[in-house]
View 1 (cartoon, helix red, strand yellow):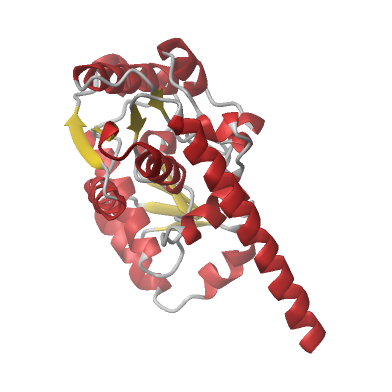
View 2 (cartoon, helix red, strand yellow):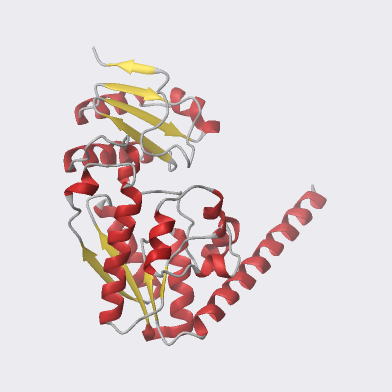
Length: 288
């Protein structure tokens, strides 16, 4: 037992050393800049980038959060709180998404990212910041992300990629900074099948459904919206726990009240690539 503890301690110490080294590289990345604006969602990735920018540039660092119907209010408030903890100047700018994006075409992610980063770029220039950075990390390059093209077209820099920081290192840095790493999340639009028109009502249904599930201890969750059908994804190793959880009937009643008359559980579990409502639902519980 003592040997196991020693091995675990050494592993934790190694992780801490790596996180410290990565944080120093990030801070150094910003030192050559006259100022910087961070496209800031409040997620773990952009929080780490914002903290490094502030550590290096102080008042010359700016965090910009773009609020839209695709982002729940509680995430905006969480971003506000995290920015305050860092100490960085923070601007929240609200945009109205055009009909073309709300119609949810296949290129929706690209169009939305292009709009949001265009707004970030405009605000940054108003404040005199010409270096604009986001929280895209090394692991993000392993999956197809249509929004990445928009970042390149807008000239957005990704310091986490530039200095070779992956998800594991980001979690370590966040802990060093006193932040609890958040479960991965994405905008609510990813819960809808391409071509299905997105409305404020349907977005609210998804948000409240996911919040109800998170309140029951399942932080990593997606509720895919198929109209009257909700397809739930939780981590695969917690599926049995979800099925057997106390209060399942109450949760189903909550989802029914929101307008989901049928509820399905995806037996393949949560998958980061399972976006935009793709995938066939399994176990269906129908409201009588």
